[in-house]
Length: 399
Image (cartoon, rainbow, N blue to C red; front, side, top):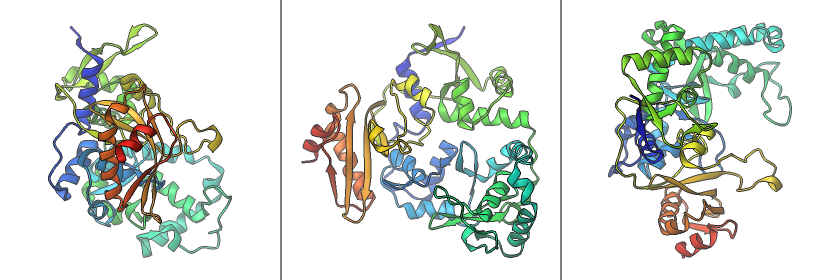
């Protein structure tokens, strides 16, 4: 008989699996940070820092204010326990997860082999390999070459940068820390030990392990939810899920309210996922937090339609530029467009929106969360612009 749970129970399961609903530690050091990264499985990287770079935000959401320099030392040092790869997209992942993506590295190599740039720049790629072997680790900006000419106004990647990225996708090159957030590249053998380099995980086994991890990290989800955590595609997903179900690692469930075309959506709960009786606490979620990054799941689970509008022209934005969902007691109750105005020393709430009028009752708690965020950012004040349905109540709560 298939286990049944309510939509509210599914939300609490998912949030608990992601580290919410727990008492915050009195202080946050390397032990707490390592534990959290293991719980999340990864930290997505994004360069936008209008409020704060994305990889810092899931930690703040779950643990509260912490010293970002401690996280930098964990992630950015050359001999870190973490490495970068395209796990969801570009992410920091534990080094022991790197071999699980060898199949993806090979797939990228095969896919890119026919691309004109790769075919035309074999000598460039060989030169980059030799340059890193002799001098690595190095940032792209440190590598000099006649072809290192920027192209186009958008990304402005040089041939050197493009070549390094191809080698990164293929697993030949990996990250060896960052300096002022600029990635330092190294040959994989310069960073990873023989145990990791020699580990060979067949594609089917890798799918099964990644889906097992995704189920533990999400708590409950559909096949699409679980596969999206590590961006898995193809028939291997259903095969691996069947194997995990047969092994008892995941349990089939039916979540009331999770329907497609009037029919229940098939879902699974990780066997060890706990179902809290309540979910308490408030948090700001990065647009790239695992709780909300799969937008269809966010809408199904929370009734919250969410799209990031960074790349939308300003006149067409509905909510704002860098909008963070606000989580209060297990519900997404609002969204805030935040900007850290470091020159003025102010955290600017450029727009504040209530979701179906639910955030006003939590205005005092959201105000306290913003004060904590401002202090964490080294800012002295919070200023609310008069835009959005929540703005009046939030401005009043902030005094």
